[in-house]
Length: 111
Image (cartoon, rainbow, N blue to C red):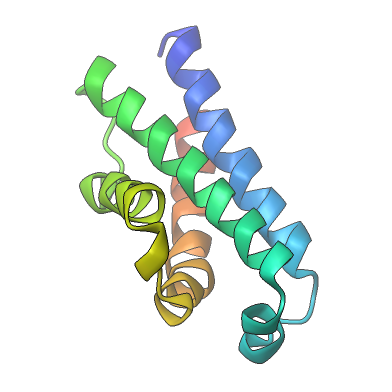
């Protein structure tokens, strides 16, 4: 795996770690929804995850990331349809999908 791909994988992992840090140990949707700064920070990290995934898809077809296309589509939705971002959907992504993606990315980085 080339250095550029590893950098993008590392960027994804760093963004996931940042989201976990922002949320802390408490996972409370109501507090998330009430905190605009937290929501914007999480959305920015999702944008980074999506952009890094997109760059991997464009340059290395041998790297398989489950749901890669959905990750990129989510990035596009957050950026381009910013006025219709649904906090409940973002919450589902960060609580259900990001833990799985983190494991997947850590496994790829270990190669």
